[in-house]
Image (tube, rainbow, N blue to C red):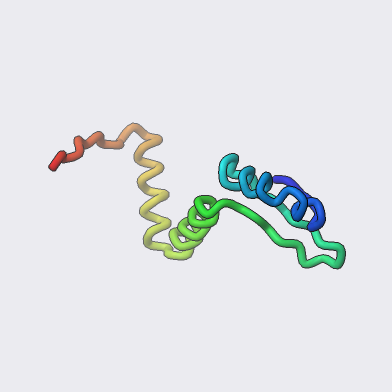
Length: 84
């Protein structure tokens, strides 16, 4: 996570966009009077939304935890994908 001032990000906006997009770096844009802003890649943003969705739905979340437990205990199953 990088914290950078509003003025500094304006000077090197492309560089910080590249850091967020290519390095999955979260950038906190600090502002003099507070109300800071967070910059992150679209992929990271979508990942956060997906995680929020799964965790907000007890059915999905419990299935996920159950699946993780099965894998940890060697009860996973390998399946071949069909090529069509």
